[in-house]
Figure 1 (cartoon, rainbow, N blue to C red):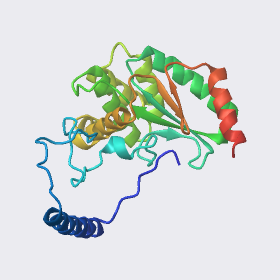
Figure 2 (cartoon, rainbow, N blue to C red):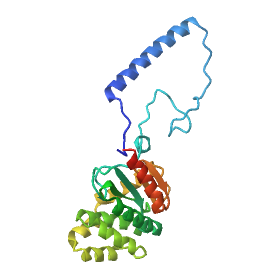
Figure 3 (spheres, rainbow, N blue to C red):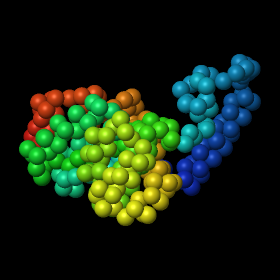
Length: 244
């Protein structure tokens, strides 16, 4: 799968092993100090590569891995909007923003390709809007997720793209009425912290994957930054299918 986690040691086993090594090192150091003239250590730590320690670190201190350390590709867990078979051999993961005109053009190319390959491709949408939760960009991402909860994500998201210059609550409510969404549920959803968090999670994921801008595409593990032509995408897709 396009997502993998690094194996972790069981916590108890790691603590016991670390404690045992520390005791053994202390015992050996004591013996050496009795038999050799050990010079005084130079003050200050030796420079290292431990993140979050200003270039210095203690090898006896275990750093807790962050999202960037454990991600090897986009997260595929079924929570993001998708179209196509779950077990399709090619998964296109698409990071985009409703205010991005290039993203709209790129997605049109992707959808055209999906029509050609039919059941061989699954498309997964990932929101990568502005970080400001009050921005039209972020609000549109939340509105799309609210439409997803009522089974109307893709047509709703198409019209969000088409109205990229008018993004706002009035537009969202108008589109909800157009697709006969339950108005009360939709309005509550727009202010739902859990839905907002799902968008924030996509942002954190994009940043952990070092995605600097949109559109950004993963075709299985292959990365494409910026707009790509239909021929560009088909070349990669065909390579992926031939390797099966």
